[in-house]
Length: 197
Image 1 (tube, rainbow, N blue to C red):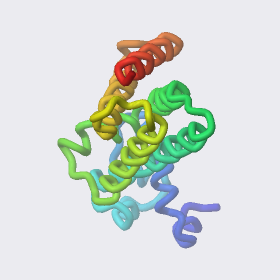
Image 2: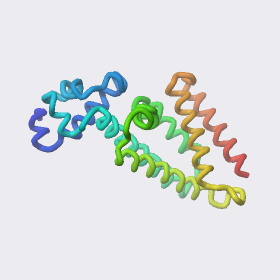
Image 3: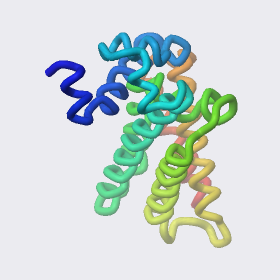
């Protein structure tokens, strides 16, 4: 199917996001532009602007799509954990998501959008929703295990910060051995659980 046929079928938006994701993986945020995206997708230079106002809007759309994947991962893990509580399995799955999608993870949680850019309402909504799902799911898993007076939200924030730190250490190349990171993640979960007893 030609690019023009895709456009007329209304698939250009999705095609542009797929191509932008590929460019992001290959060249990082700095190498991604609407001009390069148009060339890559085989459309006119103005075509991407019908879908994304500017580069910030494109990056927000990519981050939104990545958060949707993370949210699905969180939901899948928590659905499994409802019958077999295994926080460690969730941590390992989260680590894999981050390390297999380093450019997307950086975009999701880095300063490009949250500090230097302008996150869209859609991006904010799904980012907050995915954390809320994580916090609610973790709270359910820890039901009856938290000391009296412990705020489940603070536990979720602290545990997520720990997981995020592990992801950053791996993505930034400080820890390069995946097996080591899984062992470190096991220790982190053990420490968190011990602190809750």
